[in-house]
Amino acid sequence: GESVGLHLPTLSVQEGDNSIINCAYSNSASDYFIWYKQESGKGPQFIIDIRSNMDKRQGQRVTVLLNKTVKHLSLQIAATQPGDSAVYFCAENISQGAQKLVFGQGTRLTINP
Amino acid sequence: NAGVTQTPKFRILKIGQSMTLQCAQDMNHNYMYWYRQDPGMGLKLIYYSVGAGITDKGEVPNGYNVSRSTTEDFPLRLELAAPSQTSVYFCASSPHTGGRRETQYFGPGTRLLVL
Image (tube, rainbow over all chains, first blue to last red; front, side, top):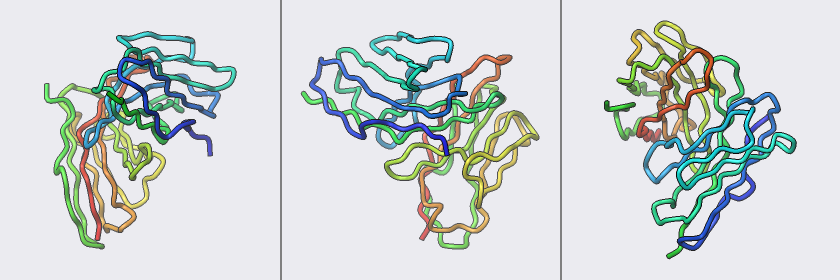
């Protein structure tokens, strides 16, 4: 079936560097995409979202890029901090009514001091 | 606001036992969801509800039941626990704002171990 997937399961970066987490999706009808951060023992926490009529959206230290041509989504985190260490999930909404999100496997981001 | 709350935090069940996972939200959200997360994996949708009295199946509904008698509460019922239901269960809610996409807010999760 169609699903969201991630290119890399783990990513290590130096504190202060920028990090990029990638995600591939396969449902061309998806119109809404979300990045979640999940710290150990906690529920997913919303980071940033983007609708399919946009290519880029910026938040505080985070930017999401959407390339619908190649069905690719990325999350850029600027000037990473130790608190950014977590598992990051992308999710796509595949329904027109209530949100039926399909989550990727997740990427574990580790920030090295 | 407390947001989305879940009880219990952790539970061990024997095969064949039943239990109800509780979920409540105080944000007056219409939409509520139940997910399960297996180790090292993303979340999978079990059931969802678009309002009181209305529920529908998600991707992995087998072995579970839900009810939505109030806007605030959305309990998940396991009737005959099986080892395959060992997982972490997350409840989420989201508002409905006339067609706009709104993000889901997640509870802290319930860790379930079936032995």
